[in-house]
Image (tube, rainbow, N blue to C red; front, side, top):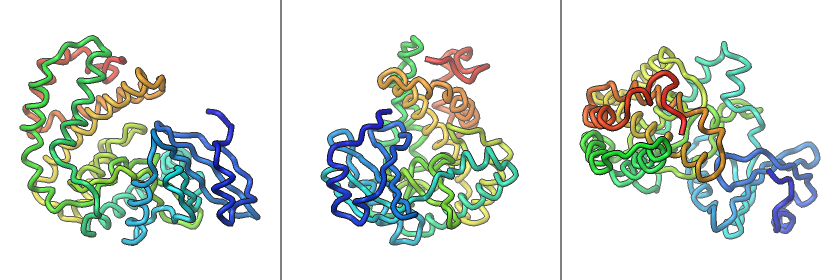
Length: 325
């Protein structure tokens, strides 16, 4: 990561009360976005640079304002220049759920319970003004596995059969996600902050859609970046059921969206390594494969499980959880 400050940074800050702040670059994520911490007179703020044409901060701003308006803890927007890619927000600090639990394992259950409570609250609110998580999106995401992972491990697979299997598996849940809930889409231990003033803060929600309530539960409890035990997963799902009463088909839909999300992530992580040179994501793929195998065991995934059995040799899915691309 370059420590050089982007052009236009000081011009943007000059239009705010933070013009004289010190600016410290922070580690980025899997995108072209960059983050900076500002310090001024003992106060801090976060500056995001999401420059066009690779990035567009408008979706982040759209979702952040909506979340704040409905009472959820998104970072407060201090200043913005969407056309130039600048967003200045409140600072949630450095404590993410992942590192906090690593350092305080005895608090894992309480932190996950609070994260489930946030989703239960979100799901009581009419969905936001966001695009639908429809079959076209589900299929486009699931296809990432055959577009990136399969070629990377030298497999020539039945692409049309793969698409048809997913259509058959996912079709039953489409009616059950009407009118839908707001789906944050990347709700996991590295995107939940523990601000200094308490509670939990949301970040990385700019891709929000309107879809099924199980999706963010999968994102949280089948986390690609840290191990969540099957026991804790089951306990948190029971807690959600008690809070939200989602219906008798919820477990099947959770498995459907678990398999779909995990197939997508295997494809994305392979793409990050092969196209973008971010090889560190390969080490996470076995964990994702393990979760996907559990999802595929559910009868609701019969067509998809049959496709995997016919197209991806078991030796690539066993042991390490999937051959590294």
